[in-house]
Length: 119
Image 1 (cartoon, rainbow, N blue to C red):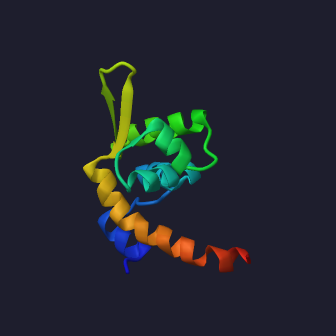
Image 2: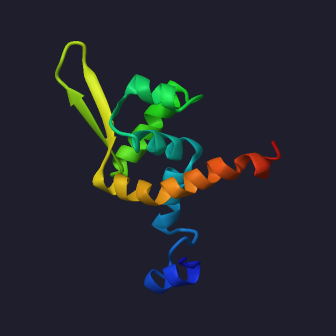
């Protein structure tokens, strides 16, 4: 396991107040960000599929989250010139690398949430 001290030997500003790591952490580990990434870890998805996979997300929040993750280089949006228009979302190579690390955490949360919350 890697400690914060070890991370800071490589980047002494990591996770400090004005460090870009805080911005990325906020985008990736936000309630909706992590759930959208989790849904896309199963493969390419269209808008409606993502809405169904991320139960409870509003259209506005899904659009905002996808824009943020796309700007961060974690998600790619592909629009096909068809009638009706078709748009698909997928993880980029960086998004895949991220999810290789996040999926074990999500599995741990799913296994332990009931006990932690007391249900």
